[in-house]
Each structure stands twice: as structure tokens, then as C-alpha cells.
View 1 (cartoon, rainbow, N blue to C red):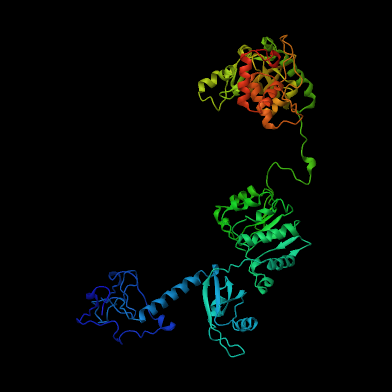
View 2 (view 1 turned 120 degrees about the vertical axis):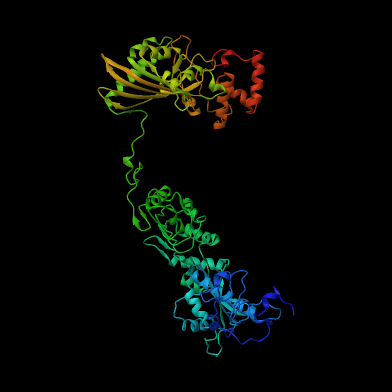
Length: 632
């Protein structure tokens, strides 16, 4: 007979060898009953760690690779002459059975420790022809733990049903094996298996039954839908319908019913449904705008970002207690802040009233509190005429050929700084060198010495810089004026608008923002501090600017308008893309918008093709001078 392992390990101290299939009545009585198993002790570890003070060895190590004696015997070399553990010999039928018994008990111990998070499958053998009501009545009559059987259905000639999170009842039902007698005298054979929850598709007929259940769970007066532990609803259980809401297909059915039948619902309870995603629930946003309260207690959402699907609902009451996401916040304040980023109007979180959020929003109930939009703002209405007169006089001189008279508008020790940002290339970068050279843009100017030098100090230095800037014409219709501070000792003015540089061959529209700090001096007011910011105008600003051309101080006549006509010759309105192309062609060619549009239309709005044709015609002097904003 062949042995597995080392032959020397099979010998006793007295030199004899005992085969595994021989009878040995020494040691514990081994049988295959459950009770006898409890007397069997397994030790783990190596043989050196199992030595006891009297010099004897403990039972064989039960760890991986250790030699075990199923009868509590010792290793070879033991002093009590008990036989050593021997490897499995082919033909031995006892050891595999006892191994399976150990695995079964170890499995049951682990199963019980995690019972609250598992499903149990009860199998009733050969129960196909038996009446369901009689079987369930007989079992319930002998089980003291309440339980809800889910999906009583055939499985071959057997009948099975499922229990959720109820291991105590499942074990009690298993203990009834061969102890339950029916009226016919037949005893039920019952087995307990660990199983996943049942997975069954919902039929069209079952959807109609689900609608009835949802109708029963909807309170018309409160506009409240109760879906708590929906799959365990008694009416669904009786109809053998299993509809867990943590499955996306089932949640889609529920959401479709809500949208179609109760779009005015205000409160929904989704608690205890093991929901982990809101993929389908997000469809309630926009379709059910009156939802104010949602309960997600005891579900499986792991991340606060899961709630992003519901962003847009004006929730005032939200419950998330019992979801794993709640344990990911270090404190309550962080938790509240994260929720309010998704739902700013939440006043109750997990049943606790929250302090009203601090913000700039206005209550919807009182829209009259929302201030009216104003083109310009004056903190003191009486200062309006004074400021507008000051601006009018200032720009009459600023847009002239000689800016030196502006010296009277500044105090002797006034401060001035200029900042700008322009494209690095293209038409928008033309004639910007003077602005860039004097710019004190703190985001781009890192040299502290240069920052200091570009802060202009004193009236004479300010006027010298203003005279270096290109000659301009401003559009008064684009001006907006804000005066947030108007005191007897100081007036703060912020002015924004657009202008063009007359020195440009193709005068581009640029945007500016100017801040004056004005103080009383003599019989009037003078500027003691000024900042000027210049950049390229947006397309919207270009479209609205210079609707009414303003004459320049030089007698060169009115400056041409650069607004884009919104209706082409065909009578159809231009798209935004077409308007943008026209403006781009104006900047590149120097032609007026109406002629730029004409050139583009004749070339099917192909910018490159229109540019090639323009270059050719211009080189041949076939384009009239009046097609250009400024004669070439």
C-alpha cells in the first residue's frame, strides 16, 4: 500500500508501524455526529510552540503544513506512545468526511457572524405537489422568530423561498428538518443555503400590480410617497413579486410611475432599500419640481457625489443617516457644508434642524427685495450732475490732439497706474506697445523695481504719460458710471466704456475701465489717484459701440462705425458665427463691415478664399477707397 509523505514519520517510538486502515481503539472515540465534533480540539503553530511544562507535546498543529491527529494524538517521538498523525491513505473514507464537517462548521460560524448582511435560501425537498399555505402555516407555527418569505417558487421538484437579514429565523427553520408534519403525515425535509437575493425580471402584469401598491403607499393630502423597504411590502410578497430598488431596471419602473402619475409629489421615502446609485432617480429633477423632502436612511451610498444626480431639486429636508458616505466626514460641520454645496436650501438634515445658511440669495417668497438693475449707480443722487459734468469735460480734452490742459484736473502729488492685457499676435495686438511698456499688471510684472517705476507720481509725470498714449475717440453711449462713495471730502468714481485709436489704419474697438479718486481743491475737484485698465473689446461690445459716430477733435470728419449689419442682402439674419467672421475679416482687410460681408458671401463664407480674392483685387487697385474705414 502506498503512503503519502515521509515514511519515517509513520513509525512509533517502539519501532512498529501502524497502517491507517487498521483499527486503533486508543484515544478519543471518533464518530461523525455533531456533538462529538465539539470534543475535538485543533491547535495551530509549530511543534516547538506546543511544548507544555511537563515536557509532553500538545495535539498536532492545525496550521498549514502541520501534522494533525484527528483523535487528539501527538507527533512522533511523543512520550505517551500515541500514534502520530498520518497523511491520507487512498481508500480511507473517514478523514474526508470529518474534513467536510469541519469546513461546514467553520462556514456556519463565519456565516452567522455576518448574518445581518446576507440572504438565506430555504429549500424544502420534494414539496412540489404540496400546498403552499399549508407548508408555510406548519413552519410558522413552530418558529418563534417572525419572518417574511420572499419569492416562494419551484426549483425542480423542490420549493424554495428567501429570507433577508434574518439568520435567526433561517436557522430556526433549518432546525425543523424532519420535525414538521403535514396533515398527510409527510415530514418536511428542509435545508438552509447561503444565497444571493433572487433576480427576476418584472413583467408587464407585475408592473400594474406595482402601481397599485404605490397608489396605496401614496398620501394625497401630504403628497408623500412611502417606498421604505419596498421589496418587502406584504402585497408584493403575496403576489410573489420581488422588486428591490437597488436594481437600476426596477428603479426605472418606479421613477416612470412617479413621473407619469404623481408629478406633484413633494416628499419621497427611499429608506432601507440598499440604494447605491441615483442614476434613474436623477430623472425626477425637472419632472417633479415640487419635491422638498427625501429620505435615504439606511442605504448603500458611498460618496457624497452620488447626490449630484439630484442637483436642481430645492430640498429643504434630507436624510442620509445610515449610508457609508456619512462616515467619511471628520466632523459635523464638514458634513453639513458638503450637503449644502449640493442643496443650498436644506434646513433639516438627518432629522436635525440646521441654522439658516448665510448667503446672498433672496427669498423666493419676497421678490420685491431684489434690487433693480441700473446702468449707473450713485450712492448720493445729488452728486450725479457733478460727476457727469466732470467726465464730460475730462474726455473733451482727452480725445483732443493736446492733452496738456488735463494738468488742471490732477493734484500736484497725484498717483497714476496703467494696466493692460492684449493678444500676443493678430490684429488685436497692433499699436499696443506703449500700453505694454507702461503696464503695471501685477500678475505679469514680477520685478519689484519695475513695479515701482511704473507707478507714476506727480502731476507733470502723469500728463507726460497721457500725452504719449495714442489719440483716441471714446463712445459716450458705452459709458457706465458707478459712484459708491460720495463724501464732502472724497468722491470715488468707476468708469467703463469703449474707445478707438485714430492712429490705427484699421481702428479697433478697445475696452477700458478707469477709477478716479477725486478730492475737493480750490473751487472744484481734482484727481489724487487714478488707475486705468485697457484690453480688447468683446464681440458684444463691438456690436453695440459707436452706433452714433462721434466727431474727432481733428477735422477729419466723423469716425466710421464698425458695427456689423445683422441682416444680409438675402434678408436672413446672420448667425453669431457669421458675425464673428465678418469682424475678423474687417480687422484683417480694413474694409467696412458691409463690404467685408459682401466679399464673404460671394465666396460662400470661406475666409481663406475671400482673403485671397481681396489681396488680388487690392494689388490691382480694383477696390474703391470708400470701402475702407480709413483710406489706404
